[in-house]
Image (cartoon, rainbow, N blue to C red; front, side, top):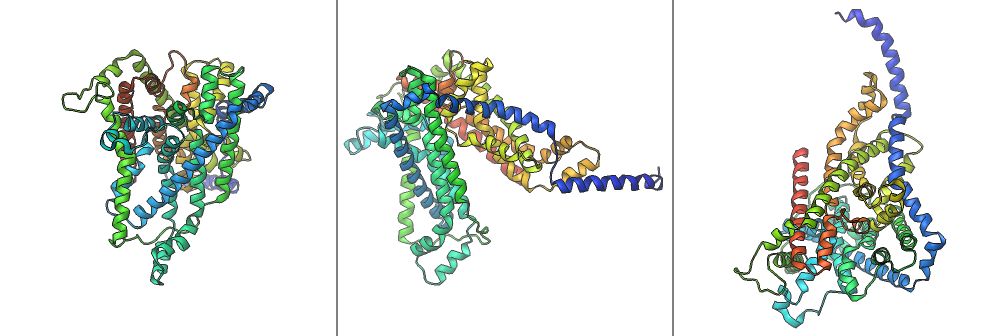
Length: 560
């Protein structure tokens, strides 16, 4: 076979190929109508239909009756105050951490960063359990400090404190990321000009960080507004009701005549607040400063820096380490109030909890749901990200909005939505209802993880595949899709780790035989079986830390 034999055909083929390449280039994207239709069907079923059901039911005459309930106004006020104060506190703490750990590089910065990010790995309701154990009458702080501590951690103060602690990791990640895009040369130039450290950060750094600070405030506010575990465990015992616990009371106790319409009305309020938060966050934009070209050097070891270091270490130990140790202490003692001695340490709580049929059922359900959600979100999020970044279509804007909107929604809105829709689909009171709710809530995680890499890839990959004779769909999936699939799988693992310990969604969708691990732990805590609940909570914390550690190690290996 000679090259000259194919030269005439090659010329004809080249013409056709050039025409095809020109067409692809002019369109700046592939057309994959079949794949797009399949994705839209999935999005409409899992996202659009449930949200439409919430809004329509909430705005019905039966739903609007809830606005006459005096408890609603109280719950709205409590939610706004607790979420707002916690968002402000988390943003301030995150700003201090960013300056101290990323710019000043205080001694032990790496360990401190890990300690302050630890609440990100622990479900909020388990954080609440750990603080309850810490402040209990038999807890370690009570025995050491006695009457110096407040009498309890229940009520508005405890809710705000815990929401602040659980939300400052998100705030720190946002602000720290923005800080890396501020050239350190600007601060160095101000320092050379004779400006003090306070003046440098107030006149140079903070103005450039303003968009990130606003984003932190808005996103942590939305996250705090949607939390159920902390207000339920720390607020309800003190009659401190928020919107999420009010909805739970409507559904669980039938305290209103029409619980679903009433819950939908509250869900509509939460939906509106979440959408407003996202709008404000998007309108603020992001810092446009270029990335720093010179690594920052550790600050001089002044007395002020050492004082700041001591404060940070004390804060990290009190806020993250001691509550976790208190939870572990409660898990290894036979009962609350038993003193901690070598002869009283036992692992019977772990064996008792893991031998309980209801616990085993909850663990099995959670693992099954986590695997299913991880797989489904991997596929759906991966394909959505490819369509948004590698194709051009008039409906990409709508697909982007519907795909990412659930990320800003409180889990309670998702749960109420599927309480309404699941009977229509014949999956009411089944694991399928919880699974599709997880897919609705967590698919955006994969989309957000895949998008940056997909955007950075050259379009020549798809063009080359099409030139070789591949269909547009095959060209998309075998080129850009192949490059981004490992990232989508990593996102699926993150989804699975999130789903296996989820509480807010499953607490409303749970039915006999469909209990999840989060619901089991919550019910044990509510029933007063603190030792068994603590034992399971410790296992969940260890699994979360180990799982995310493995994901991080895998990502580092892949980058290397």
